Image (cartoon, rainbow, N blue to C red):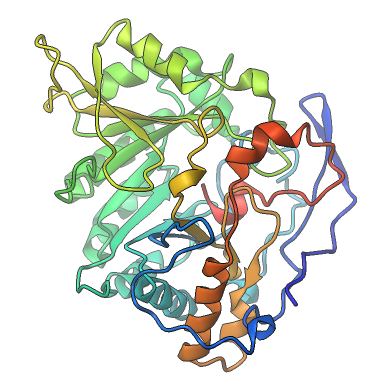
Length: 405
């Protein structure tokens, strides 16, 4: 039978005037997820796999490292991820060949987009080799997989050209403000914003900023996590800076992911207020979603006639707290050590690494992943308001730094 993960750490970490339990769910394992499903017939790949809410599998996010060189307080706060924190040993990480094998099965099941995340994915040695392998994957209809990567931008300047040459199509850069003092404070390692901006420019020069041809699929995106009272005064400067640049700027509500970031609702700035602030200076018009399952609501800068000025570009808002988007969520997440998670707010995963390291055939792997998705029931954001306050007594959600955003 499938089991919930156990073995939690009882260590208590204090920060932000709050005491929270630090829970390490990485070492525990689940048995072969397909074993409990016998004698059901093995599934085959037909390019369309639906969960219990009829949501297709279309997006796979792969964490390639649990390490990061930033200590952003909403993701990897320094009070927890300090010099004594134990990261995964290299032998526990999926190899590039193992990642590619798993990704190939997901693509056969209907995945059209693969996003590499972390931690900071550019810290993974020879990441270009993995990109080369993944870039050869084709959907059941013969199209290349939309291969993209999310980065904090610190290493992008020196790697952009090689990433493009390896087959990376698009990149998303996390940038929480243009003010250097604010930015250094939020990354908490005193990293200058100028180097991230240089990395963004290098990505555009390398061609990682080119549109793939789909509506809303501009190659280069900037994600800004907005915390009320911390960096919300950077909303308008960011909008002004990237308007007309060919870059899509997206504002993300500060999320209650994991158990270590000291999340409070009063630090959430609703997306509706973000839009109101920008519209007060720069008129906006709503745009259609670029594709089913898209998390961002799109807004285009308007011209004098009240129509979308494509030269000025667009912004997006991701209302991760105030407006649930579980209804058409089509994303799965693969952790650095091969655990499969079906929700960003999950507290348990499925151990695919054990499967592929135990002489499992491709047919068995295909069937296991298919049955897992077919049994998916996750809709945390829709249920959040009815769940009541988190007392810390139940299973704790996995950290964002472990499975990516």
